[in-house]
Length: 372
Image (cartoon, rainbow, N blue to C red; front, side, top):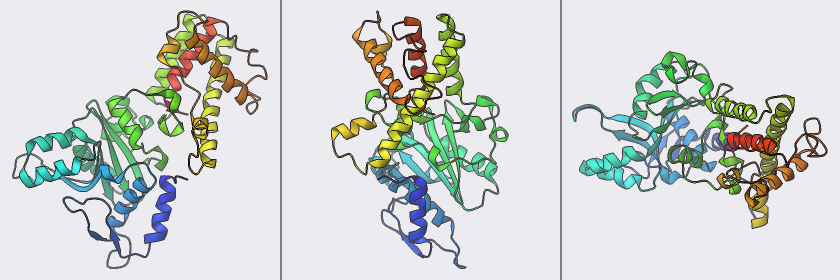
């Protein structure tokens, strides 16, 4: 069974708490194999301990393959006589990154430097300062590192003595990844980022989630599990508020911005929560996928495709497929959520009434890519 970041971190601590040296399993600048000292002279953990604790947890939890990650990465800054900018860690979207990295540093290839900047998807700063000066580290180290990426989106990570802070560069804005921490939303500056608040380990995006956020590849939503969903970050999340606004507009258009409409909204959100818990529960019982049928049981049912939404008549096969899937989910969830859902799925929802289906499809559309 796959372990979480937190569980692997505990494994690292059990294995290396008393260790003096560590065999690096990631490139460090241009060096592939190297031993690192994990202790200060007085025997306490040094910064390298926390660096390798973080990367060990990131890789052995299965969140990222080691082939995409480099440590102690150097990029030029300013004119050729300026000191380079150093990343404690960098994550790329292509396993060929190290060949380009060597080509730049050994032969000063500007084409390779351009390639690297176009393929950085995350930069990482490691500290052992007990979060004494997060503001300076963010503004003078991590933020400049994020600027090296030429993608519209890049993840920034500060890991300071096991405290986690997640940031992002998005369309030229430099913000906390958790939008609830950005007190002035997109206009937030350093003082507005609530840097006294840390992020939970379970909010670190996986490689797949990060790749999706940057490149938006076409998704087959019928083949997704909860691990493929993006976490809604904070109660003030733009995704959440925009989604609810779109749902309310649809309710207004079909004249169901009333008690019945809100009952449908609450019940469909309950289906969303149940579907995620159902998938996660099945996953927890499977150490590996033994068959295609077992794997299919993990797939989420709470989704709507473009073809299903763009129906002409409620008798169309596409929209009927959506209706049948939602009714199946409703009848399964009603056995567990008896105080929210009705025993009979037609008591609140008229599955033959187009206004009801439009609301349901809008709710599913707005929340299907996010984990609640």
